[in-house]
Length: 283
Ligand code: AMP
Ligand code: MN
Ligand code: MN
Ligand code: MN
Image 1: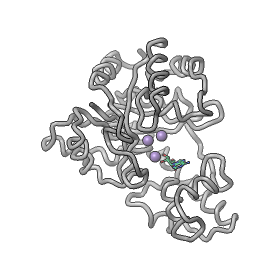
Image 2: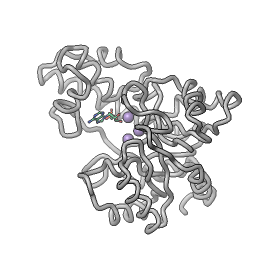
Image 3: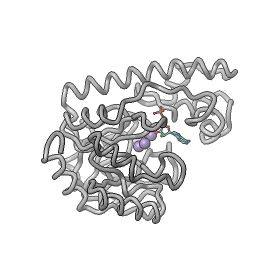
Image 4: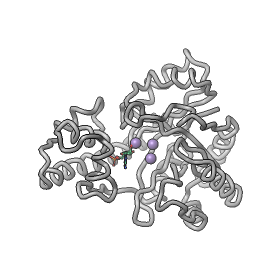
């Protein structure tokens, strides 16, 4: 069993990166890939635990793209986290995020919420601020009772307090990831668009734009979704990945490795991902 999608406190999770390898080991995993949003800052501390655990520790990240008018997440699995150009590109993405965050604070203030950037920062353990931290700050300010209410009423993708940031084109994300030696994988396609979204044609389009595969196993999929995406991968000859999307206490009910309890991502997927990686830049 493996888990190739989870977060640390360097993005919107709550665990220290050095603790995650031990959770992976306790879950009985053979390999684990840390995929914080827009950063590889947690990777060094994560990989430094390698001598202490049997689980194979791997580097990744999760980027946000614009696709069909919505946000599409793309994982960069097995990237070289020390690649200088990739790190600069990620720093640029974090700059766009900071700009969005400033505009989002302003928007929330205009909507009558007493919230500052410092209030949001106070909810985070790293410099990267995400909507998860906005949600917590809105609870602390008394604007909403629970973080899920913050997403429902204010800062969800269609909410009045949400401000978009400039997102990558899928081919740009795919190229950046491949140039850093990684494998570009669509994260949780089952969460994109309405339920039952027909993925075949859009996924072919993404494949033509450099995306190698997608998550057929995911912490929040039901068995029918897993089945659908496994069949699609056979049809399109695309590689498959999977993970829990564990965020620690920021996403209660999900555990590393097993998701809601029944997730099992097969070991063999790593072999496939490594062979895509070995085929090099544009195969
Ligand atoms: P950001 O990258 O700052 O726009 O924040 C996106 C993050 O917010 C996602 O990775 C999720 O962790 C979280 N998120 C987005 N929408 C929701 C939602 N409706 N309910 C709970 N968490 C959400
Ligand atoms: Mn997240
Ligand atoms: Mn995501
Ligand atoms: Mn994620």
